[in-house]
Amino acid sequence: MTNPVSTPGEESLPFAEFRSSEIIVEALRFKDWRLVKEAFRILKNQKKRLHPWCVPAILDHLKTKADFLPHLRNIMGERASWLAEQNDEWTWWLDLHATDSNRLLSKDLLPWIRWHRSNRNDVESAILRLEDRERKSLLSEMAENPIVSDVTIARPLLSSRSVIERSSAWEILLKSDTEERKALLDQVKNFCQKQDDQSLSQSSSRTLHKGEVLPIYRLL
Image 1 (cartoon, rainbow, N blue to C red):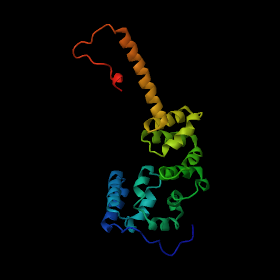
Image 2 (image 1 turned 90 degrees about the vertical axis):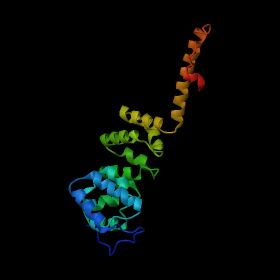
Image 3 (image 1 turned 30 degrees about the horizontal axis):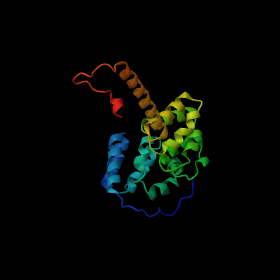
Image 4 (image 1 turned 60 degrees about the vertical axis):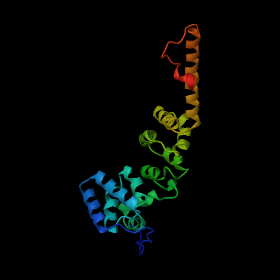
């Protein structure tokens, strides 16, 4: 156990009412994750920190709940870090804020990557340190709903030996506003236009009937 510090740092936002903490702790107890997320969303919108009474319960229950990490970013505050420094079971919260992922064990990397995915440029090297199964699962998850920062992660993985990783990388790039996506759309447009040109040349002697229209790619 680490040495305790005297007091937590000063919060930049006010604490939520005590009643909200009772609701959250009760929801955690019964694993009502929908209610927990809704409570977090409300606190974020109100620009308030979690009441100190429920922070230990959150540190206990949400260690393995990766989908909760985005909700915690703006509501945990200084008290959570202060408590985590004094309990070895809660150091996962401190690990999320590590400035250097190289000091983390591979088993602790996945939460760190999810936490920093949108705001750091060294996430790629951390992803490469994941176990194969975790890395493939994470990339598939990212491909479902890619964000801007995922593009720089995806491009190097186009040369991966893994079919799953290459497929996820392409999916990220083609769902994003990238040169790869524009190039593919241009290829599709050119192919369809050639098909249209062939079709029109074969029927050039035929007059369009009333209501008949040109193929859509002739209008692009």
